[in-house]
Image (cartoon, rainbow, N blue to C red; front, side, top):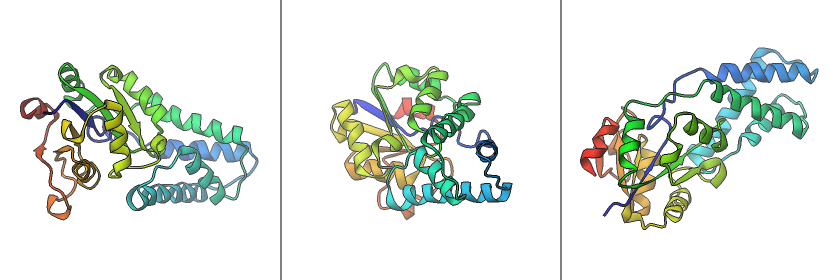
Length: 236
């Protein structure tokens, strides 16, 4: 019997392509270089930023380990051969956070209303892989959207130190919910992380098919496939 649900965040509950945050972050980096009197041209800063994105991609897809925004920013400035004091780096972290908080990614269709309905019957958790937007900031995004109150637990890869489909982050969610795998269903849009991770640990996997991935190419198959979040109400 399903007693709880865990959700992915990006492209499951909120849009992942809302705004070009990268351009704003590169502008921040250029300003910091100028403040530090270590002038670098736009192409060099963009290349350093893209290098950090590749590092994040490697950690996410290959090593399956979480990486903090502090590590990513340190990587950028190492690529630029600029030594930053901790206080300056922390200021960049804060300014990067402001990019998302000033213009939060919007909720996807039906997400808020579905959570409102489901939380009356099930405990709800979040299992989210993070990049330049850390868990602390994403928690504030949830609060801005007035949905934070629906969650019993929040698991972010930068805080756990592991990304989906690692069993570690799913087990942390189960421990926080005090439930067994067969009592929890995970909902997400990525087959190779959400579905594989949930099924590997024994949870029910519900795949939101947004045209990302081919079920024939993964080792586990989802228990349910939906196209819209409101379909959850009818299959649970």
